Image 1 (tube, one colour):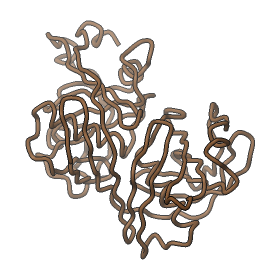
Image 2 (cartoon, rainbow, N blue to C red):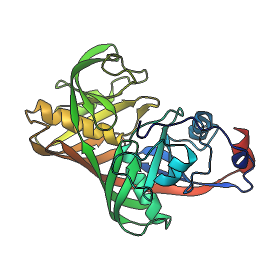
Image 3 (cartoon, rainbow, N blue to C red):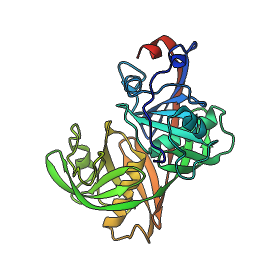
Image 4 (tube, one colour):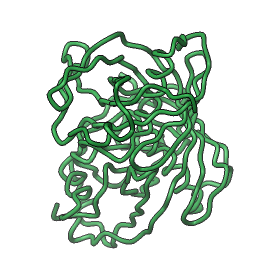
Length: 313
């Protein structure tokens, strides 16, 4: 199957890696990532290594890992069975892993940080290019960037409604809409919520959901109804991570749900939503079932992982 991932076991060349391993750290509206530049896909990225690297006590710490590799190199290394739709072998590919080491199809905040990183690191010159993901090609436009700050728009692709469903959040049963944005979401609009009452909801435990509709788990968003200013407030519980300060695909799913609840057809209508999350603000546009996401990226620093530490994980 296109984009299917094979288990990557440590290879002798990887374990005997003679020099320290470069890394970067960045965030998109405080959804933070460890970035590993690995153009030729030479590093063995195992779930155990990802989990330790993203642990905020044992490793660098982050909501996920972004490996920067050429798409063709990942295929040759066996990390991808085949190139995903509309992704060329020479495209930069965002090999994204959740903090627990599990594989995720897409991450809107991650794509912004990824695009910013490849430009700031000198790996890419053009400010409009394609980022490969397991959900297919994601065209990006980097409006501005320097070594620290960037502003990026990502073409997020199709937004598909999966149907009505429900979630159990902090002991309450809440109606939601299943949304596919390259990965699964359950966006729950609660008209009774205000920004203040939303902030008080306990999201320390995973929400309950329908496993028949979401057999591989789901990201759950809880949000206010859209206000007169065209904005919503949102919080998110990400599968494999827990509550995060932001989730790019989650903001798209939340915007889609808010527009749907206001009477717009996802397939035929168009609209823009300003989404306020704990980590900041982004803008989401949906036009005839296609979405884009614009927001900031921050590269907070870079360094080197000790080769001995990496080999011992």
